[in-house]
Length: 150
Image (cartoon, rainbow, N blue to C red; front, side, top):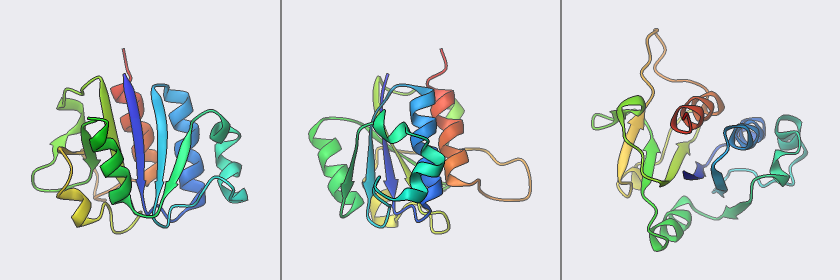
C-alpha cells in the first residue's frame, strides 16, 4: 500500500509533528503534503513531537491544498477526505485502493468545502461518545494504523 497524507491548514505544529511520527510508525506513507497554513518542517515545535520522523518521511509545502490535489490527480492517486459529512462512509467499511491520498483538515473548521468537492470519497471515524470529533493527530493515527493493518 502507498499512502499520501495531505494536511489541509493544520495550525498546530505539535499535531503536524505527531502525524509525521505516526506516518513513520504505521509505514506505507510515501509523502506528507503540508498545505496552506500548515507549518513546514523547520519549525522547532514540530520536532518536539516528530522526534526525527521528518527525516524518515518526505514532505513538501504547498501554498494551497488545491495544488497538492492537482499533483495527486496527475499521478492518478484516489483522494479520500477524512471529514464528517452526510455522504461520508465509515472508514472501517471502506475498501482502500493500493495507492490513496488521505486529507486531514483544520482542527476546528475541518477540511475546506472547496476541497471536499474535489475528493473521490469522504470517510469518517464513528464517534460513540458525546463529542463529534477527535484531535486531528489522533484521527490520523487511527486511520493510518487501521488501513495498513494486515
